[in-house]
Amino acid sequence: MNGDDLLNIGAFAAATGLTVPALRHYDEIGLLKPARVDPGTGYRRYRRGQLDDARLICGLRAVGVPIDEVRAMVGRPAGQVRSALEAHRDRLIAQVREVSQRVAAVDEFIEKGTPMPAPLTVRPVQIRIKVAEVRAAAGFYTAAFDVVFNESISSLQFGTYRSDGFFLITLEECDQAGSEHGGTRFGLLVADLNAAHDRAIDAGGVEVHPPADFAWKPRTSCVRDPDGNVIDLSQA
Image: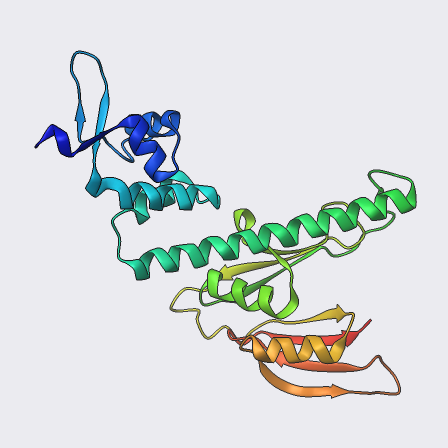
């Protein structure tokens, strides 16, 4: 390899948007190794052919993609990088929803004058439903009802813990033998019934009955999620 074709670490950093400390770190963890390291001085030098990978790494880290995922994307076809970025975008949207719920909880605490309201009575806070694939099911519910999916507990989270609105719908994958589980039926109270019903259909749900008024209960509708679970929607 001709040394004239190599860039020193400062020039490479300037050409890629990465800092010199970042390049040293990526060398140490094996994410982006220099083409040559001088055995006497330890100076790192890079090939011009490494510029594209370095610029990709810089862009991915700038939008918060974790190092392990960056490592998996480098050198992959553009389509695979796009799919990984779409998954990262979904994760960021979930984080925005979670932060919004926390802000709402803080507002509630401020209004009530207490940071941690104690529960006054027993009330249900969780149901479990069977789904064919957790990530796909989570995608339906977050798109349809703008709720938070807490991946660590495989649950759709309404409100924040110990707030009045806290509730979990936990998603459990059914095995092949149990795939015909018959579905679970549950209800959700929504601020705008027509809008919530339409969003559920747009997200992949199937209409069981359209929004309708009743003399003995609030305006309601009913949809079936892609896994066969039935959701009764009621106007708040």
